[in-house]
Length: 119
Image (tube, rainbow, N blue to C red; front, side):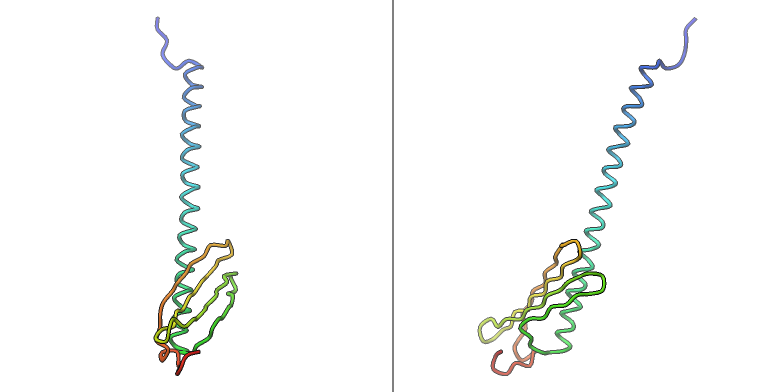
């Protein structure tokens, strides 16, 4: 008469394999969640930098540097520097609470910032 079923050793080996596979899947899920959070933060920082650039375009005022922060802990820096006589470089840096940064850089004509003969 033959017995059907699994031995204790086969069951333990199956449990170990299942546990290792489960741990790998949980680690993969955890990394995926962290990557998504970092990506979402990058999008938010980039959007904030673009909003600051729109504010500059609306204000049309030359300011060598400006710094501020938002209620969520995001810190931003805007610097404007003449590049020769014909252009002004605008650098925008936005940093979130975790220290991750987004940079935006563009050029404008001095007349667009109401600069007659330079800063």
